[in-house]
Image (cartoon, rainbow over all chains, first blue to last red; front, side, top):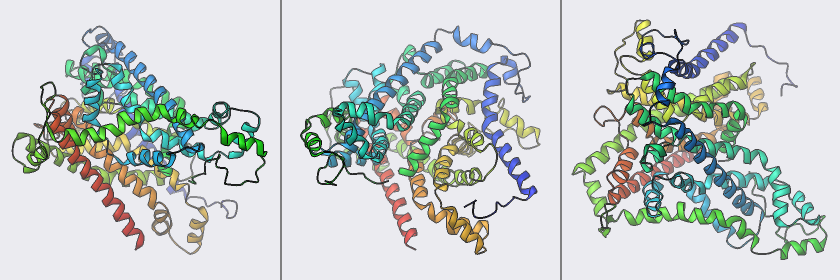
Length: 283
Length: 320
């Protein structure tokens, strides 16, 4: 459209207004995060002082030392727990979803439409329905207070299958037929031809399921009992209970819990945002 | 999205480039293969998605404290107790339902409109657009635990910087944002908007970019101002996405737990404990499985009803 009509220049005053708005919003979203970071490096006294400082007067690692020296809140162990759980959950979710989505999009078999219908229908079941039954199932499997309780129950959701199925369905079938003519088995057609074509969608699902698991809060709070089994989100609650007046310590804990995801966000920002936006359009 | 037909269906397009022999081989290709692909998912899906629905319906009809050998069938008694409004469990449950309802009613309108405005802003053409989009979306990648702990500090009545800043510009600086009502509602809703506004905005933004530019140009040539074009061109084109956002936002708000557990810590006196918080407490701390199950069913039915209502409203509005 821009090629047809000459571009309209926004009046100067409106441009300035736009930039004031953009920068104001940037402050609203970024300042709380920067303040969290700054507070983590403040002394206990400065962390609660009424001066609004984004750079600590006397930067200190005291809060981090306090956390790492306290055996009742083993934060490094929580980092490990969170990483292990999120990676395993993510791997399981993606592998199951990729295989199932491919079969549903590209293969002909009895019960395919029925399965698709049932899987889709469960997307409309509110999450609260799963809560108590998951607790009962996990309890009877002896998984309470274990990694399995965090990794497995959420791995078979309908979303991943639904999300990937559209991508597989949109790949031209000539590519698949060519692979078969060239002598590919169903497995190698999938692994060598179709999967690489769906890589952007798979990457998005990897990032989204990693984030969902890393950030999960309610479930770990209720199924983990011992302090050495906590993930970072549920551990933060213990940290808050232990140090209810040490805001420097709490912010240091929050920084530790958010640094990995913020780093991931900086690297994979495109996939995360595009993943979210496509989930909306297609939904 | 088009539902592409499964490629192995032989009835469609017989005159393809594939030689006949190859096609016959595909058709004969082991009938077990698809089940090997879908099997692993189906097993977990059956155990952790389908079974729970049946388990919930079943456990909600039992009087069952986990760890005690009970589980006796009581029919609809749990529901009757809850619906009667009598007794601690029922009163606390409905208090939680009210909290959830109030939070949903306050947050959904904001979470539908504010991100829309933000998406319109980000849809303008200016330098560094993707950078701003990334900054506004950033809080969403943090979990509710980090967001909750952070804002519990920022909003602290005595030592939190929010009150300090308000004092510095001459506004009241003693509001107990985390321990009193109605200030607590402002905190819970405000933080939730701050945290998730980018999520809905990104969904809107993708849809905005699908609105044909020609329509805007045509409307502009016809003399329609920006406001008129918004209502006559943009919003009608976004109807499906709006509907989607309203439904997922209601569901997300009704699931609110972390904010009230960490920011207000259910204060004052449990007055910001949500329904899901009370269900989790009843089932997984007090081990009262029967009651917690019945509560889950009631909340789920309310949510499904709300979603259907929203869809119905959009259908009616669409017809007008």
